[in-house]
Image (cartoon, rainbow, N blue to C red; front, side, top):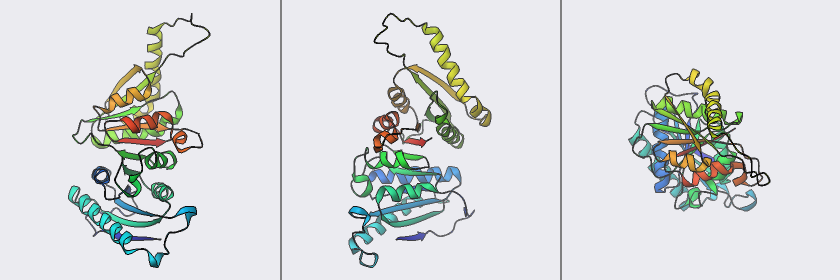
Length: 298
């Protein structure tokens, strides 16, 4: 069951456009997520949908039948949504805003919302509701399963630094992350830092192997340029900084997050656990970045 409240119409209707979705629970972190989502909806000329989830009990059985929802849960949910809506309208008055109160499994409900969205935006950690769990639980599980980009708004990056960073791999499955990162850089009118981190393989049984480091570096730069080529042709207005490092990818991207407004990472983990589905690099960046992080599944 869900209830929907749509804000008053604004000039330039967004009917049929893909919305930006943000999940709220009344926490300060969710408040930052609302501001981020409202700004991005404005940049995209897209509507903003604000959702609050009242979770089901064990085994997917509702804790309360719909007509008997405790007044406190309903009233609190409506209050959280109303406050978030006011904040969004105050932040970006021209953005069309709607709110939705949902009863259901938390992760499934958020992934369902993400399915029809340009992106779903979450706070990094909150005090109650969905964000009351640690980042590695809810945010990582949604990022590992949702089929649209998942933006986790961490503290930091409140002041515009005019840069988006993206991790680039020697793997075609990073293409969706590149598409999202180039689009974000275009929408923001800022520089895109393409971070490619590489490490020499460790040959425990052949320590005598020697590498031509200059040749290795040239090969890594060429790999980056080959991966970026088609996207630079599609987004000629985006200035790209090539950042090739001999480092662990998590370290390189976390370092880049210190001067970025947003870090974009791809994810194509295949494990059964949520953390494995998300992937070790994505998970590490989510936990340690100094600015919002967008996880884009392959």
